[in-house]
Amino acid sequence: ILNKFRQDHGYKDGSYKKIWDEKEDNVIMQEILSNNSNITPECLYDELSKIYATNI
Image (cartoon, rainbow, N blue to C red; front, side, top):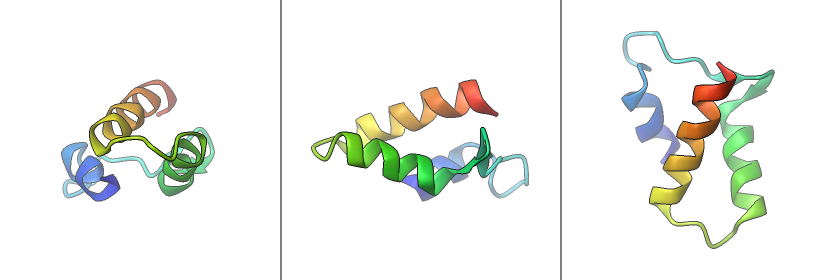
């Protein structure tokens, strides 16, 4: 999911920011997963989108 999210948000063209509010995106994703182990891929993507929009 994180790789798709990165691609959808400009990873290839260099506009994607991996650091969100002083944390790497993979750390943010792990925090989301640890708080909700039953999260669906779609919901995980949505949560990443919400956090990315407010922290870059």
